[in-house]
Length: 190
Image (cartoon, rainbow, N blue to C red; front, side):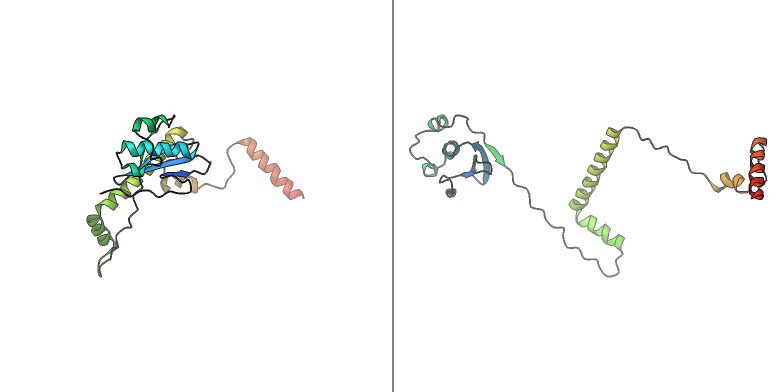
């Protein structure tokens, strides 16, 4: 099977397209795989880089942008900076979770358990997500250093029983008693 020939774009060359910042990018497809060749300052240099990729992949000469190029060595001499073929990996399409129907009379817990048995990959992915989140949170806490919050231990009502039945008499400190006596007397004078 002969691979499809890439159509010429605005650049006028196969596999060459202008990038946002003015450079020319080169992409090459072979045997169902896509390769990024690199960016070049001119469309001609990019087209020569494409020629190198075509000749390395042993594709037909009709795929060349410049049919007058005789050999791979000649093509490589026309591209001073060389080429760096890097495979372009495409992101996998996110698949939707399967439709799951809860049977009549089935509790939520039973339905969730059935889903977990039937779709282990989703349960595993969810667990991995939460493990990742926990690891990131722990890393943040470790980077932040020890907490400045002082933990308070729980106390029962029995611990507070002595304080709840306080007598409303004066205190034992004579200086405080004098203060309150003066305070009460100043209220009465007014």
